[in-house]
Length: 332
Image (cartoon, rainbow, N blue to C red; front, side, top):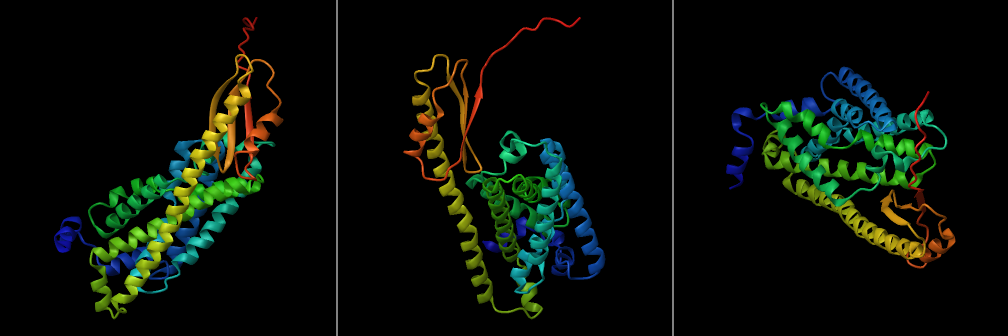
């Protein structure tokens, strides 16, 4: 059964050799100087593009950064190294590369006006509240990327895989949020990156093992299968941690929003014309958007209501719109 599935997913005539995979994914193999210079150059440029795209709130620019970002190379190299039971230094490149991207994001934040509302930027807001669906998407992307790397005929999909996974943009958001003094938003973006990283490593290792590359490793004198099983067991646990964390966060966020909506509804009940526009969670902060043409009730009343229903330490932001339209006439 497994052999039949393997033959359909990776036909023998399209299968890349174990040596070819190692050459592409291991930055310590072959012409290391050229590989590393290309990696650091493209990663720095991708970080600059992504940071500019995040600050400008430009989806197209951020997608461009995703296409050229090489951070997935050492990540998938780490997956292959786990199958090989070797230390290739892939994690070192991921960590150092991640630190550089965060630093670039922090430097680019100097271009922001002061004060700046981070939550109004969709590129920031969309990467600071990780969900279970984000992790599932990362797992699917990891499977697609590993299969594309193992086959000779589907390399054209790799740019699409790069767009599907979010690696450099969350790290840019971490740097921007830290520089703007908002560690809660930075933590949310970091959780998203770590979830994607672990999902890619797990999916890549599983694909490389399932597609039969362990046979090549054994022929090359690799260690016993027991080590592979132990490695996969550890990876499963590491991936389950962010899954459980994201699930708990999702449940908590839903409850947080519902409590915020109910408390705000009660708070505005006696205010004519007032209505709730939206109640959302952004980076573990409760953001309440209301429209009220007249004066609002005392905000201390709302905070007392929320403090009695929510855990201690949750930031609350109230955004008010008057909803007034004024016809100024025409220019002369």
